[in-house]
Image 1 (cartoon, rainbow, N blue to C red):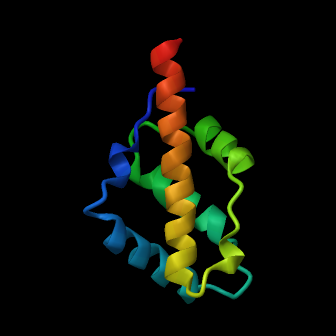
Image 2 (cartoon, rainbow, N blue to C red):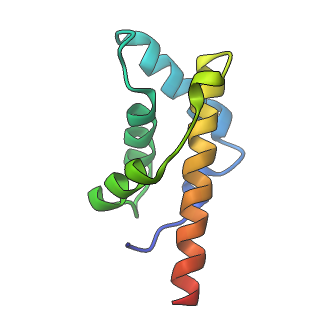
Amino acid sequence: MSCRGPEDLSRSTIPQFVESIATTVRARSDSTDVEAAVLRAVARRSDSLALPDVLELRSLLDVDGEQADTLEERVRTIINAIDAELAGWDRREVTA
């Protein structure tokens, strides 16, 4: 794992980030993989996430976004799961 931090997902920008991703997903077909779309957006926004990190995140995320009432809530749930996973990675790197 490379050094990365959840600073890319600062709380002040999450609402705009969520809306941006939701708009992108809505513009595509109903078969769009929302989790993949969120991961792509997070990776593009981050200077420290490399492709292996994104693939690892994809395999580790266990998000039940289907329970969300809106697409925005689903995207926010996935972003929160990514943020929590990255925070765990940072803690492991500090103790290593």
